[in-house]
Length: 308
Image (cartoon, rainbow, N blue to C red; front, side, top):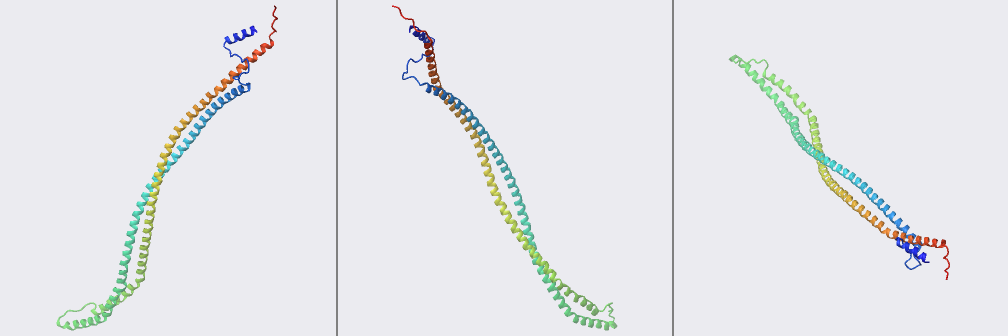
C-alpha cells in the first residue's frame, strides 16, 4: 500500500493528471467525454470548412455578379451611344424634311397660281380673242366694200395726176386678211380642251403637293416626338449605367465585409469548439491513467505477510 502511494506521489510529481479515485460528482462519464471530443473536432473541422467554402462561394458569387453588372454597364453604354446616333439622325432627317416640306409647299402654291393664271389665259385665248376676231371678221365685208370704193376713187382720180397703182388692190388684200382671220378663232377654240386638261392636272398636282406637305409635317412632328422619347431613353440608360456602376462598387465592398465577417465567425466557432475538445481530452486522459493504474494493480504480486 505504501508502494502504491509512493508510485502515485511519483506520478503526481512528474506532472501527470492524477486519476480519479472514485466516482465523484465532478467526474464526466466516458461517453460524454468521447462525445465532447468528437463534437469539438467535428465542430472545428465543420466551422473551418464552412468558413472556407462560404468565403469562396461569396467570392465566386461576387465575381459573377460583378461580371454580369459589367456586361450590363457595357450594354447600357452601347444603348446610350445608339440613342445618341439616333437622336442626331432624327434631327438631321427632321431638318431635311422641314426643308423638303417648305419646297413642296412653295411648289404647290406656285402650281396653284399657275393653274389660276392658266384658267385666265384659257378664257382669253379660247373665248376673248376668238370673239374679238369674230367681231373683226364680221366687220370685214364692210371694210372690203369700203376698200373697193377707195380703190375705185383713187383709180378715177388718176387723170388728175394721182399716182395710185398698187400691186394688189386694197379690197383684195382685205379679203385675204379676212380669209386668214377666219381660220384663227376655230384654232384657238380647239385649244380649250388641252388647256383645261393642263389646268386640271396642275390643280391635282397642287392638291397632291399639299397632301405631301401635310404628310411631311406629320412625319416631322413624329420625329420630334421620337427624339423626345429617345432623349428620355438615353437619360434613363445613363442613370442606369451610373446605378449599375455604384451597385458594382457596393457589391464588391459588401462582399469583402461579408467574407471577413464569415471568416471571423468561422474562426470564433472553431475556437469555441476547442473548449469541449480540450475538456473531453482531459477527461479521457484521466480515464486512461486510471485504466493504466488498474492494470498495474491487477498484475502486481500480493503483499508479503507482516511478521510479528
